[in-house]
Amino acid sequence: MIDILPLLLTQALLAAVPILLASLGEILTERSGVVNIGLEGIMLLGALMGPLAVDYLHNKAGLHLPDTWWPLVAMLAAALTGALIGLLHGYISAYLAGDQIISGVAINLFAAGAVAYGIQAYWGVAGYKQVPEWAKTDPHLGRRVRLRGCRRHVVHTLQVQTRHNHQSMRRRPRIRI
Image (tube, rainbow, N blue to C red):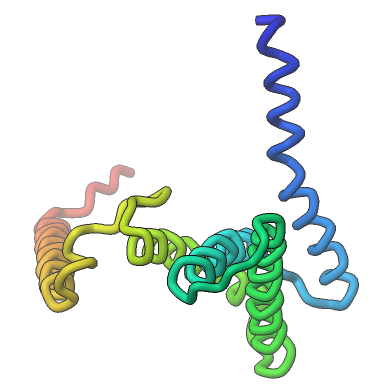
């Protein structure tokens, strides 16, 4: 147990660095009057776009750079992605008078789905979340399955509610004085 403690502490400190940097960025944005709840989503999208840009430029576009430059290209792509998403959040919040919390949560939700789908679509491997098979192959099949499941749920809810209302109307009130 004592041997594991330094390793655990080291890993915790290494994992805390991105969160600390994001919280530092949040402090700066809050000083300007914008509450940015979507920091996790911005980091997720940047973490996807960095390797995606490097893979695309190196393998598909055939760009040949020294090996020491590729991490810089990845960081530049991630930073540009983060800046664009932050600009979108600021535009929605400041100019369109949208709610900052809702915009940030929407960025987080979009990023979670986009990263899972982007990893699967571009590299063909399962990322941190599995994309269902119907979502990859036939978009119309997924819509039908979801609608059928939704219809069943709504019909079942209405049946239960109707039975409950019908039974409660038949009962006599039990008031004891």
